[in-house]
Amino acid sequence: MDKILVVDDDNDMCLLLTRFLTRNGYLVASVNSGKAAVEWIKKSKPLLVLSDFRLDDMTGMELLLKVKEAHPAVPVIIITGYSDVKDAVEVMKLGAYDYVTKPLFPDEILMTIKKAIPGTTEGGASAPKASFDGAPAPVQRSKFSNGSQYITGDSPEFATIMKQIELVAPTNFSVIIYGESGSGKEGIAHQIHQKSKRADKPFVAIDCGALSKDLAGSELFGHEKGAFTGALNQKIGSLEIANEGTIFLDEVGNLSYEVQVSLLRVVQERKIRRVGGIKDIEIDVRIIIASNERLWDASRTGKFREDLYHRFNEFSIEVPSLRERKEDIMLFARHFLKLTNDELGKDVKGFTREVEDILNNYIWYGNLRELKNVIKRATLLTDGDFVEVKSLPFEINNFYKLQFESPATSVSERKENSQSPTNNMSFENKLKSANIDAEYEVILDALKQANYNKSKAATLLNVDRKTLYNKMRQFKEFNMD
Figure (cartoon, rainbow, N blue to C red):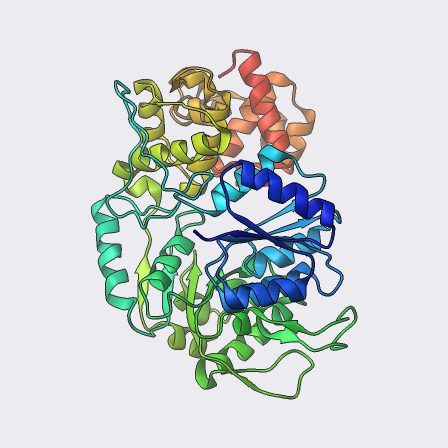
């Protein structure tokens, strides 16, 4: 059986973690330096690596790269007492499974390890399948499950996508994946990688929308020491890390024109040059990109290079939104329920029929990401065997009350009957000057104008999303829903 490798220059911490994990059924090996860890992984493949971020001879980031070079699929969890967000983001982007800070809590570290090793219990054995006899909505997996925490659904639309994945995966074609935010584009990219000849090589996912204009080049291509202010050390870019494997560029349309030019050279010549470098580095990497906007339209308006678009457009996949495949909603809901039960150590068996109806009829603007968050919250709040309506968020439970108002309370009729001079005011000024009744009216108006997208409505009102939610909770307390 494979062992968990604990790496820490603190002997007491090594001993503490080794004893704790051994008591929980794992086989454990420990070393006190990065060099010793590198030698260990050259001889054996660990089940998981648990490493301190600051070692005497190298950083946890450097060790992470060594582990991923030798064993790309092995999860790495970084532990540190230096709670630096930049370090956290960096190690996650480079492929770390998770990043936790000292002091360590036993339940937290054990749960993180369980999640990092899907399909296993503490001792590494296959987890037994849960049986919920008598439950109205038992947890089940999709027939298109890939065996990990990602499932694709059973709808006809996803059956078509799976056929497309089977067709394109064995090739080296670049692929464009179109779909709304949260619809599962990264999961599909990972499926393509897993079914390709590069499956045992790195899969690196980058959210281009989260990259600043100044640092995008460094993130993708790497940089040399001294290339710019703050470049204290040489950095290997994501494209180089993904060499011989696959890189997934989400929301690629957000990349600046300058970065697009450099990316075009990668696609054409299969070479990169680090920022501040003078040497070309040959790479062999498959590029999969994703966008929630049509790149052809973006190329026509000059936002995206047309030549780069044609290079990428060797094959494309359309991911339908969750509201377009309602037959998948409860499948995913039960899957997320199972994951949350495992995470929280709970045994919620399913959903009441009323909750199922609400989930099936909600629009799910945030797609799978929104559904997952709703299920996690509802599971946490559930005390009994089944998720009840009271555990659902306000905007989910009251969606149709907001969307399909009665004629007597409709926003449009209120506007027609109102002679108030505030009608021509901005949403921001209306919200600031209104009392509780008028606030309700203004927020409903903003929600309707934003097509019930809470983030867009908050922008119209010039408040943050949290403030908008607090206002909506107030309305609930005043029985205004």
